Image 1 (cartoon, helix red, strand yellow):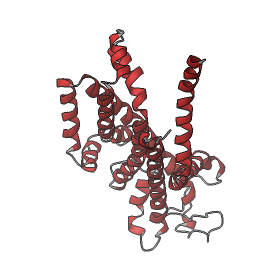
Image 2: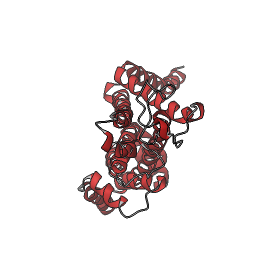
Image 3: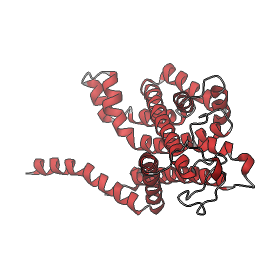
Image 4: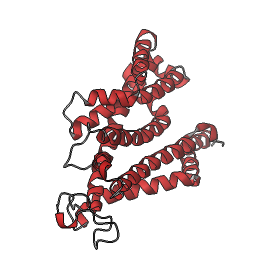
Length: 296
C-alpha cells in the first residue's frame, strides 16, 4: 500500500506543479492583458484581410489622406496613395508577426543547440562556444543587424534569417547555464552510468528539465524580433514596398507626420502593443515557472 501511495504521489506531483504555475500566471494581470492583445492581433492579421472589403494594394487617388473615422468604411483612414490603412495594417501585421515568430523559432533552436553542447561538454568545447557567444554579444545588435542586412537581398526569408542570426546568443547563455547546473544531478549521472549516449542525456534527460527558462526567453525573443524588423524596415533595409510591414509603413510616413499623423501613429501603436504584449507574457511565464515560488 505504501509503495502504491508513493507512486501515485510521484505521478500527481507534476500535475500539481502545472496547476500552481497556471494559477500564478492567471493571477498576473499584465500577462493576461498581453496574452489577450497577442491573440487579438494574431486573429486580426490572420483572418482580417479575408473579411475586410478593401485590398491593401488597391489605390484610389481620389481618397488620398482620408482621415480616420471620417471616410466611411475607411475607419482608419487612407494613406498617400488612397490605400485603406486598416487593410495595410493587417497585412503588415501578418508580415511582422511572421518574421517575429519565425525568427524566434530559428534563434531558439540555434541557441538551444549551442548552449546544450557548451553546458554538457564543458572544457575547451564549452569555453570556445561561449567565448564566441560573448564575442558576438559585444556588437550592438542593431548595428550587427544593419551590417548583415546591407549584404543580403531584402526578402521576408532573408530578413527573418538575419534577425535570427542576431538573437540566438541570449538563449544560448540561458541554456548553457541550465545544462551546466543539471549536468551533475543524480538523474544525469545515473543515465551516464547506465550507458546512455551523450545525445540521449542532453536532449532526453537534461533539456526537458531546462524548458521553463527557454520558454520565457523565446517569448521575449518574439518581441525582440518584431522590434528589430521594425528598426531595419524603418531604415530601409528590411521588407520592401509594396509589401507592407509595420516598420516600412513608419518609414513611408515620415514626410507626412504633420499633415497626416495617423500614418505613423497607427503602425507605431501596433508595434508598441505587440512588443508590450509579448514582454508582459514573458514576465508572467517567468513568474509562473519560477521553481522558487513552487511551495508544496
